[in-house]
Length: 108
Length: 111
Image (cartoon, rainbow over all chains, first blue to last red; front, side, top):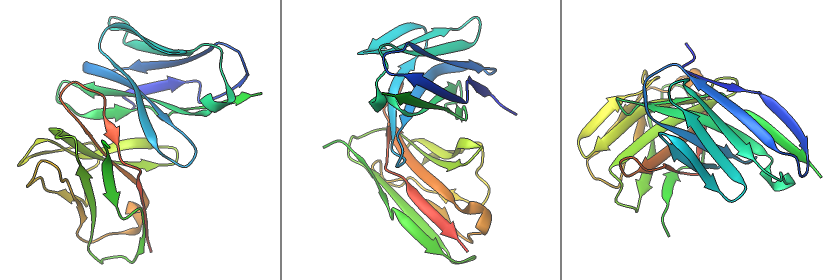
């Protein structure tokens, strides 16, 4: 059972490119989360959203509740953006389900 | 500094020897949770707690126990560890409807 699906699994981009990572989910949710995990393992929460769009610096997250779909966009990508990006959802019972992540490499 | 602290960071042990991984947060968060991360499977929730004395099973609770006697602490207990519990474990905390703060992770190897 895969409550959360991400695509692509791997992504290589040139520095400066616009990047999109997609996430689809199949359960009712109270919130959707985008996480970043750098090599070495630490996890950071980038966004938590339940509707619309959020922006933080060069990162933008959107969610379409009707279509059960979210996207994470990175504008003007930089090598320091290289990381694994993980989509997660919280269901109405406060349980978390995670996608398997998108490994992003940004080449200078 | 706001943080979630896990101990130990690394542990190699043997099958059947009880172990506890501690998790402590200094942000007065109500919600705490344990996850394991495995290659190809990603992160999966083990147990979570909405507040003191309130715990619930996540996706993969078998072989684990937790307790929440104090708001700041949420230990993960492996009563009889087995090799299939070899994994990278994360603790996280948050207030209601806010993003989670994650600990640095604990890498467990069970031989």
